[in-house]
Image 1 (tube, protein in one colour):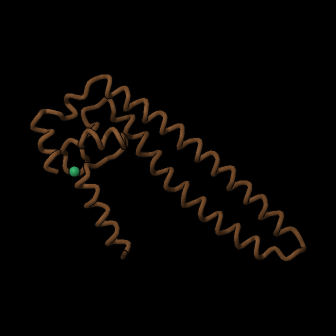
Image 2: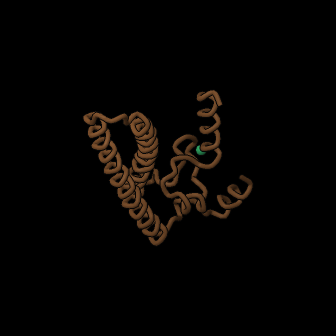
Length: 145
Ligand SMILES: [Zn+2]
């Protein structure tokens, strides 16, 4: 936090983001996007595979209860993972859309510039580190953890 302020005073804000930085962020966002898409496709076909297996099991005469149970668990796991991936995908897509606007690199909660290192590591983040941890705390509270 103190370092953030020092950076800002030195003028290292996103307004100074040069084209090279922007383009390298764009490249890593695009790479991330196709990575996530590949994962989603893979999970999707795993899910279809499970569905097909389940149909076969239901049609069979044998006792497939144990297999069905593990399939359901596997299905739930895949759905949870792909749900997370879809969130990431939405964030990445949004970041790509914002990349050419003044809003990129600005925290959507408090409007302060997001730390440059954080942005390089996670170009798709919506919030600065302070708001992010605040939001996570609120979510944890809501979830009753
Ligand atoms: Zn913030």
